[in-house]
Image 1 (tube, helix red, strand yellow):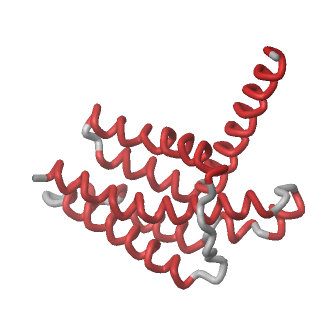
Image 2 (image 1 turned 90 degrees about the horizontal axis):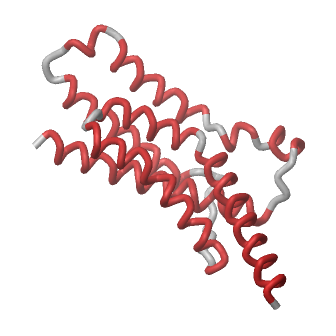
Length: 169
């Protein structure tokens, strides 16, 4: 039963991560990302409310509560509640976009999906939910960087494919 509940906790996280990724793809496609833009939008990228909620989760898991008999239940409930709150709160965000994913973004999304699989495979292989939750919170906090790197990897792959096709002609 505990393992099943752990798998269920990934759903709210995935919903929120997908929403963040969609917004990040829109921002990356419509803006030139440079130092000035990063300075101006730093607190839109690295959200303070997310950092506080992650800190609360870490506090409960590291302090004397980690020795409690039912800490796994608190861990599951707290992780799910934080991600559900962040997901529903994203609908009230003034920076929210109504951007629809285009076909040109599909390869970037595929790279993001591969990156998402890393902590899930870790959980399946080790059954260590706490470390997996820490990794997923890290993914949430550094979402913009993950999407930006996925976009750059995608652009590099496309450039290499086009170069290779051009050489073969």
